[in-house]
Image 1 (cartoon, rainbow, N blue to C red):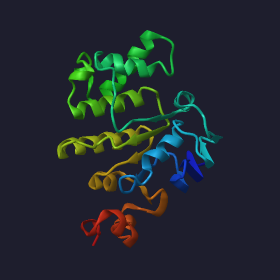
Image 2 (cartoon, one colour; image 1 turned 60 degrees about the vertical axis):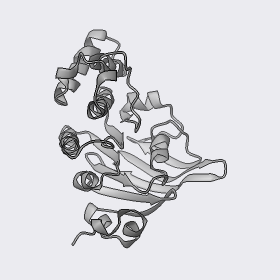
Image 3 (spheres, rainbow, N blue to C red; image 1 turned 180 degrees about the vertical axis):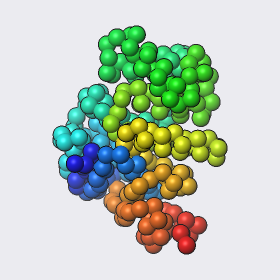
Length: 241
């Protein structure tokens, strides 16, 4: 059974159709990529799936349950977590505090929440920053904190919205390694990303959207050679020989 099934999902804002009859299926254990030009509707699709917006029409099924219009906090408790393009931690609090807050989604015990938070930080090689104020972190470390907060909710499906934007090449490589390790731990990943070498290296399957509509899907190699995708988004540099 698919972990996430999106059927004919449409989201309209007045006269603007931001997502247009989108279909996609994510199987357990996949790393699934969503790409397209700026303004294509990628983050709107994420917002509908994660409960920030209710879709105008269509159906979203997560782990066997229809979740149209479900609240984000309930989805989080059921195993669907997401990150955001613009990270907004509790800047005046330390890293451990930020991740501990996220841990309360699955426990009412402060002790247990802190233990879970520390375990997540250790798994991300981030425990040495536990006492650093979030406002003093580098961009790369703020991104890592965003991932840590999402992981602290114990997700089955992790939605990653451009978590590698603004990172240096070596930092991107480190993130790719982290996501590959998360998959080995049994976490399914749905990722939006503009850094093509990362999305192509990570993804098992990719959907491409433009003006809210799906224009292509397939393996990274198939996407890199699709004339529609090359023309709309990738450019000739991404053609696979």
